[in-house]
Image (cartoon, rainbow over all chains, first blue to last red):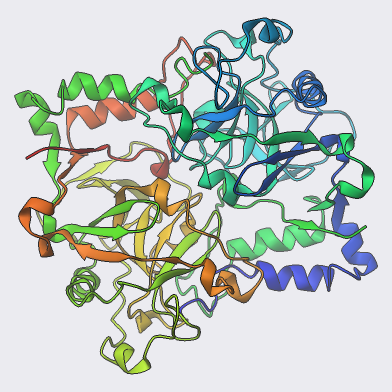
Length: 301
Length: 301
């Protein structure tokens, strides 16, 4: 009881679009695309595995760096050392403090990962399809979706960027723009839009956000949220690129195409949610770009 | 490293405004108000205690019901039985399934809590101060803060309502408007604004959101997110109104007054975050009402 139509009709929509995960119809197959194992990052935590899809079109240099770090097993045994509730979960090698469960990271190792040129925005390749959200935004001149990612776009310079919605995957940096090296973060609260185009976002969590939300938090008033008690920092047990795994061990994800009829239907259902439950007239013409994400499902190949 | 000004200058602002929690200056004292023990709900989970401030001006009937439920220890031993990542954590007595760790709730007990008249919006008392956010919103005609709560307002009918930001505390209901009885929810993801004025919101979490985020999730595609394995539902160990506790056992919270100079300064710092770190010109004239919350602190009486 008390849950009738409270959740938007996503489940019904998915059933309508895909009939069943095991036996998709032709139409359904068209509405979904496979996530490439070269773009699939798996972060193993003690709570469960978090899956991130990389977006090389938006930040090719940062995606290449992340793949190299993963090939080198760089993150294995490091921690989520700075986690601020409602803001970000930051992981990797913190030079200032002990970043593993039992020892500081060797500064010599960090020297092999020099600072990168920032990629705050990008000119997308010709084939990229931008599907407008269909209403104004409070921050960006235009917002919409590219390949399942929430995106801002500026018609003046043609540049596009990943929006810092919950689940965005980005590199942290120092004060200067071109200073990101190895530390990454995941947004875990109401979208901090001031980070848009101010940090290099290069992917999004497609599964396992509930495990990111379980990570132990720091006190935001102490050392900028860095967890002081090292024993309370949750370890990154393994962090792996799916294409580095044997084929039989790779999970398979599909993301709903944001240029599909199924996704247009999802947006429409958010604008006019089920009248049995939502009784205020007028619906919701203006959606929050971070309030509607491209659905994700797992498939058996 | 890589955390310099990434967090907005809230810590610095609080120090500036309050100097120290133990010995506030006169100015600082003016910037904060005490949370009344009659409005303070403490939800004890195995992860930690969540503190909720009730907002009787917005939904007096629902606040009165919640206080009565708490006097009766109604929630003790029930569970968070429907938790959907990025959406809501719903707790209390679910009639359809076993809602405690080991037994269904007795339907006879539920009959003593009849459905309530919805309080989706309210005419605020004369003394209530509405502090406008200072920019348009995507959903509500006007948005701002009343007494620390994020609020929507319609100048046409003068009504105001709590916005469904992360941390909002509300009663769940069935399809019909006047059907809320005992089940409550807390928003745990990007603000689901379609719930604004569609459900009765009557408080907000002021501490312990990180414990709400640790709650075990259900699968949104199965039974609307109700956790099927009862052993995985996190118990509400105790849920208590602070004024029902002996005075010595009550925690003391203060909320920054949203009509204070300190809060205006906080809004300004969000619009123009530290230029050492944020390098895009123009700042952020349009803030998200759910992106700036009234700060909270604990005090020793």
